[in-house]
Image (cartoon, rainbow, N blue to C red; front, side, top):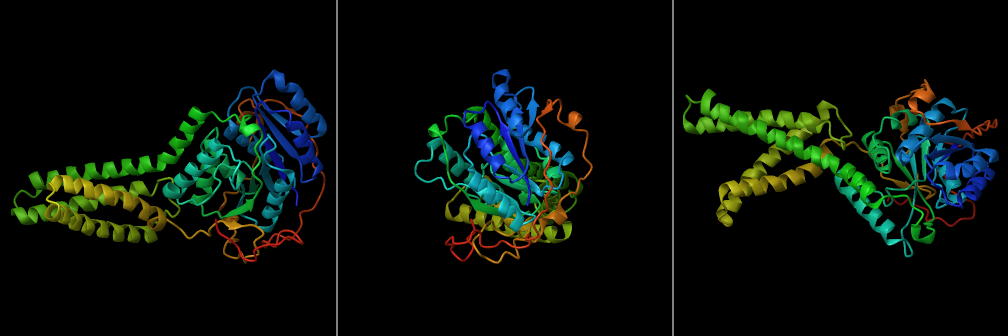
Length: 428
């Protein structure tokens, strides 16, 4: 199976040309390099790559890794030419050619999945990299129910059918790779995990990751779902209080006090719940937007939350002698946090196979529920020059060698002959 190897590069080090030469020699498919505004000083490097047979696209200014990947996706849409997908790799040589090949093999064995080359982050990993990945992985697990050890890996296998939609994913820099994972989660696209070597050179000093600016972008992305959930909850509270006041002070004023308060509370809470449900269906973590199955679950949660709110406030007031308004605020705040997790993992969730290690020998029928049926098939290639916003000249374009894709694409086999494997798959 042939794939297009995509390598975004910004001010690459001396290891890049030998690495690209090694990737070319592996014969996995055409190699596409995106110069993300490295400038005239690096022109000889990219000229050498074009001379070797790489296709080189150039950004006039640095636009970020996400933008570079999108430029590559647009180009690939017009030059697919028999490839089964693309594999992205970093230019600093952290992704060995052996691991790039393993990702290609996983794409062939597990079609319709997003293949991720995941590192281990054992001893010797630079503290900044290890800590950043642990924090990001924990946040993705809590906020989006995405359970991956390495959420920032640049070694990914993206099958045909997914590329058009990925152009619509937000993000121009490092946050784009997180958004790609959220996109796959929303559409119930399974992940195939390929364990890879953890390789860093000079304590990762060559990284162009901007600690403050890029971390702020990632934090903004990670927190966006929670912020939108909070805004939805806040709007619901406003609707609840407003409707309640209108009913109690005006529309139901002729009723006795007890039925007036009861009917006002029920009507106000019902209307605010409709607003809340409508808003929450559009949150980033939502997988299932169908009204039928989700509305029933939502109102089961709503009823349980209503009862727990009453019991919690009563217990706080009688047991802890807390002020009733303070007790209401505290109990409802705790219930809101719990409600976020229940909606994330049950109300708006669909069954998605957990990430499975490639080459583990586990029968992967569930994992291989082909997600490509759900991909938007966008075969019409847009005008490349217009879409890339002056991405720059295409130089050194190499022709695609003729070749047929192998037919073994319906199973995840034992990966390599003679390699001792665990026999059963392990979910990460």
